Length: 117
Length: 114
Image (cartoon, rainbow over all chains, first blue to last red):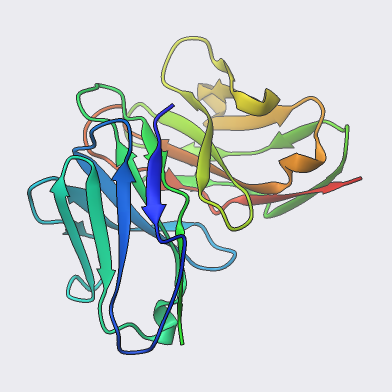
């Protein structure tokens, strides 16, 4: 089946620094990728929709200048958390939609745990 | 408005017992439905999906789900639960085509008692 890889799986960074999370579709092309955030004991919340070659579309309440999303190729999207604060500590998950199909099958990465200290 | 409701926040079952996780949805268009499982510290894995056709869908790990349009439900079932099934289960609804994202329920945490 389709595989989506996220890296790093766990990262600890100091408050005020930036951290980048990568999302790669390993065996398929993904025109569209999604970034989610999951708070403890809650469901996933969509942060932004990333389309290859264009600017990401952010959900209401998500700071686009803080959560920078780049989707430079059909197999890679990155999320950069800039000037991280402890409240940004969370579980971030990406997903990728298979390109060239009429069915909206979406595959998820394994997620990245971010801890800001 | 689109929404997914999973009424049970936490369910505990004994190993070997049957399981049913409830999911109700509200969606403006023809819904396409998914169940995902998330093991602790890991990402989501697709269990099964319903697009059209037979309303009883078979998935991985022995799970199945039944789409009932009249009840706006897509409940997940398993005849005999294994200890390794302990995880968080998410129901999601989306559109068949386009770049639409999925709408998730709040999840149901399954605990399996030996």
